[in-house]
Each structure stands twice: as structure tokens, then as C-alpha cells.
Image 1 (cartoon, rainbow over the protein chains, first blue to last red):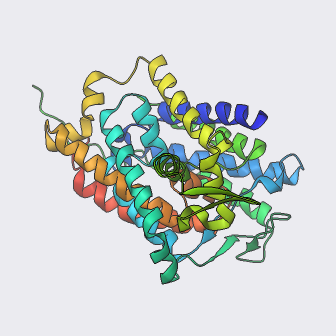
Image 2 (image 1 turned 180 degrees about the horizontal axis):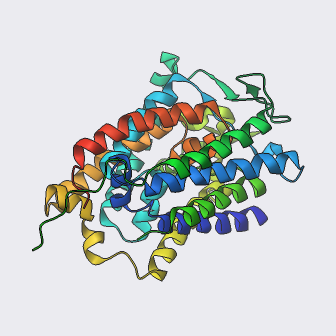
Length: 192
Length: 183
């Protein structure tokens, strides 16, 4: 029961924050991905950095259970799937989580996105054996460094938690360094 | 106008941290499969069956990793599925509290209107196709923007960086070609 309460609290907080930062708004996604306005990119980079620093520092202080980490395997299909997701994310302005958030907040196009998504997920369920046969799903779970107690191999021989804090700080630094408008201001629109 | 990026980024980071502190990293796209499996199992009850030591499915994808997805579809009142339902409720509540998404926006986003005019049917068709491609890709990759890009890179998972590289390599050119005007 506790886990269900946590699901409700953390899930609702996640949905509310996605709405408030503009991640569920296809206008802001479009501006970010066409590199016109990187406000949302700065938000996301700062979030990854913040989460990373808190999690790894918490682990080193013994406050965060390393067993809560969940590292996904790296394989060729991750890159191919990333390409597909990226193309659709740009075209629609929605990814799986933000599409659901947008649909729930009344955006009609997001309902179509979610419907297409359910069909796409079903298509993958059916075609999964063909992907297995290609061998493109085979890979290993790896983190950059070796995180003590995580049970996952590190790519390089450095302590993963310290490296995680360094990477987190790097994400924060990039968030601050990125310009809001890398391509300059848009051409002024003629007054009506 | 969305939250200032410093406030917004900090809040989003705290949510990701809270998730891994209290339960596990955030992920969303698997639940599209779980929803499909719930519906499919209701239509054709042979899809998921209970075995002595868990659940099994005639579908190889639901059956993988010891029937993990089959089990979650058979018991939808679990953390990950409720999390996604709560995500939707939280987003809807937050949107309502700030006055709701405007009527024009709900019908057609401004960026679409600016680039393609008043063509909602075309927009819905593109959104549907894009949804198909996004979820197919997310399942092939084993995660989406939440699970791979945010949770993954936060944990310094190699898969997260590979996924992000692929996603932006495709997303930036597509967005630059499709959305020349800002909206």
C-alpha cells in the first residue's frame, strides 16, 4: 500500500512539474528541438545534474540505497530506437510521458499521439521476436565508472559515485552556459 | 510562460531524486505496453496465464524476463502503472490551477498554426503517426525520454547517453525542417 501512495505522490508531482516547465507544451518542445529557444533544454539539463548530484552524494553519505538504481542495458537497438523516438518527438512535440500529460490537460492532438503510441507499442510486442533474431538487442548494463554496491560494471576504472557527482556538476554547468537563443532573436513580425 | 529554468530544473531534479530515493528511477513508456496487454488480455484471456511461479504469456515480449510484463498487466494496481495514472492527474490538476490550456491551443498548437495554418486534421494525423513511431522506438530502445534520457543519464548509464545521442540526432533536423516558424 505504501508503494501505491508513493506512486500517487511522486507521479502527480512529476506530472505537475512537466506541465509547469512547458515540457508538455509542443510549442516549447518545437522551439527547443529547432534550437530557437533553449529554455526547456536548460531546465532538463539542470534537472539531470541536480538529480545526479543528490543521488550520488546521498549514496556516499549512506542516505540513499544504491539498490534503488536501475541501469538499463546498452545495445545497438537503443540507438536505433532513440532515432525513431527523436523523429516522432520532434514531429509531434510529445514524448511518452509528456504526451500523456498533455492529453490529460485537454490537448486534442495529444490524444491522437497517445492512441498512435498504444498502437506502436502493440506493434513492437508483435514484432519483438524479429528484433531478438537480429541480435541488435544484445548488450550489457554499464555505468561510466563503477558505482560501489550497484552490481553494474563500469566503463572506466574510476569510482562511479564520484564520477557521477562530477558529471552532475557538468550538466549543471552546461545548463548555465547554454544561451537561451543560440541563433539570435527571430525576425520581427510586421505589426498588423 | 513556463517556470524560470532554474526553478523548474531544480523542481524536476528533486522529483527524479525523490523517485530514486524512495522507490526507483522514473520511467513511462513500458506502461503503454502494460495498457495494451490489459486490453488484449480482456479481449482474449489466453494471452496471460498464471503459472506456479508467476505469470506467462503467449506473446514473447510480455513473457520475457520471467513474465515481468505479463505479471504487471495481470496486476495493474502496481507502482509503475499507478505512477503513470497519477502523472496524468498531476498534469491535469496543474494545468487547471494555472487557468487551463486555452481553447485554441487545445484544438491546435500555435507552432502548428504558424507553420501549416488552420489544418487540425493534418495535425492529428501527424500526431498519431508520430505517437506510433515514438512508442515503437521507445520499446526498441527499452525506455524513453524519462527512463533513458533523464533517469539514465542521471545514473551515468551508458545506455542513457547512447539513447540521447540518437534522439537528438533525429529530433533536431526534423524539428528544424518542420517548424521554421516559432508559433
